[in-house]
Length: 168
Image (cartoon, rainbow, N blue to C red; front, side, top):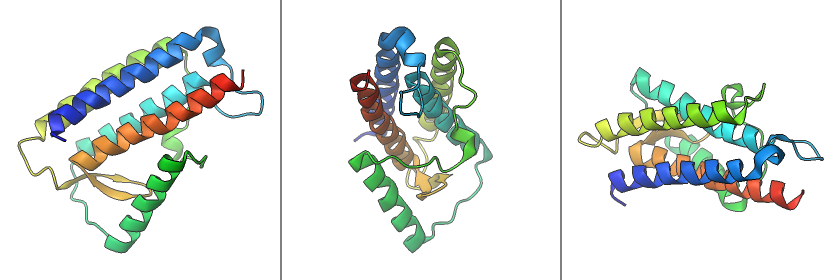
């Protein structure tokens, strides 16, 4: 896929997710009866993840790949996303506690998303195969890997939204 198209798809995925949370109304603020995050907290978690990557992009530090460890980590993340497994967050930076009101999450995620998109679009003329951020589990990600990670992360949590809806 052409990188600029992937960035548009990421933006569209973000908006669809926000629409799905908005459609839940007041129900979206309530955690499930068995425990876990509310739909709004899931959106906040996704926003915090993009914010963490944005912060990492700003450092622009050189990233070395560790072939075996990174491949195993990337495979683990792929399995989690593909199978919809529930796992602990890899860093407290993306923990949606305390929960924010949906209006704040929505506004902040859109703003962060615009900044992520602008940063990545600015890198399209350079070496898109050069690692730009490090994920705590899967290691260094290049521009396209980062966009695909963010899109897969949203898809993974859309399944969580569906489970939340079914449990109501």
